[in-house]
Image (cartoon, rainbow, N blue to C red):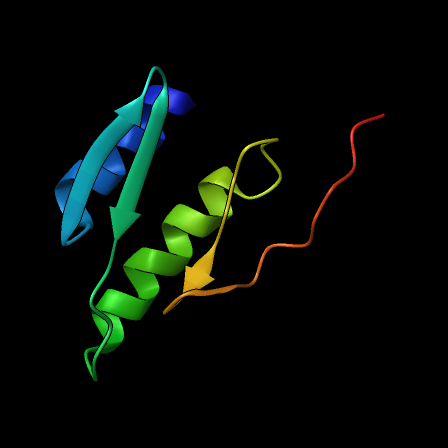
Length: 69
């Protein structure tokens, strides 16, 4: 699933950068294009719930903080 998420982001995100081992940052410029929103949402659905997933809009985090068990 990880490789699929990276491939999807590579194909659809405005930018994709590797920021560490198995750590990527994908950015979408949403504007008024409904397709961009759909692609961003598709990627969020693929990765949401993974331990290290962070979703931000602008610089505001939308991901709930999860405390280690």
